[in-house]
Length: 194
Length: 178
Image (tube, rainbow over all chains, first blue to last red):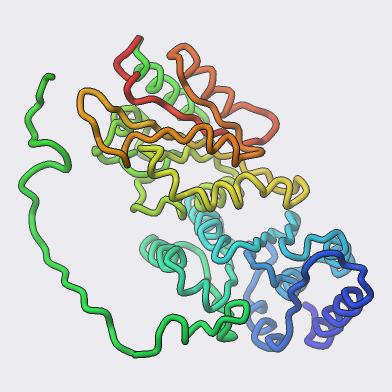
């Protein structure tokens, strides 16, 4: 596995290429989370799947993607969605987009009784999206082999996540009542010929 | 055979393939016309899902990454609208985004809701075929307007060698027709 220094050096190199106008596409550089990721990736096995976001260089490198191959992909304007089949690595630039794909992959693994698992990385705003909650609930409900990793820098692009969700600290008022229905979903339970 | 009989026949044909798996709402529980067309498919091949349309499309892509051929079912076209994010932003683009490294093959099945003898309202009988044909560049859109085309169309979606996904649109008003 790459060291912290190697990760930092790689992104420095990409930064220089970007400044030299060699990369004609957006790049989302990683930085400041080397220690946390190195610790997490100690548990990621070679046969596991890793799903990532637009900011995926560190994830790819720590999953075992070759440095030079990754650099060539970045130069080919694909930094925003890196895909490496040999390393079971998949990423997307749609917010929270990979989360349900990761859940489906985990479901496939479980149905085939395989031993590997899925790791899915996403940011703190994505973690607040409805689909993320659906995915975590379903994965828990069916005990799927998946780990959700929330990378919390408090920002979504430059929007402060907590502030825009409201900071009153109060819960919304919800009324929930139970009942048994009298009629079927539609109609009245008696066949009508028109 | 009626249009619906042909659909049932096509589903059984798909079910014979070891890799296929059927998922959506009312595939395993009654509640829509879908249930009747899936009733002879082995239980082990059906996954009844909560109402999670966009997540369902994402899950279908994920299952395909693990070697399955998902039959992702949306009982009405109006409901498929909610899965358009995953359909357009991922399923349709993954092959080009990944330079052909990933080719998820998903068979999507939806239905233009019936209008006779009961009119179900604006939100239950829409037909967005043309809109999806405009949006989708790689997923093939097939509207099933003739009974005789149903089995060959599903067979092609299953066996196609280009790895592409197919969206098949059924017409509920035709279900009783020959």
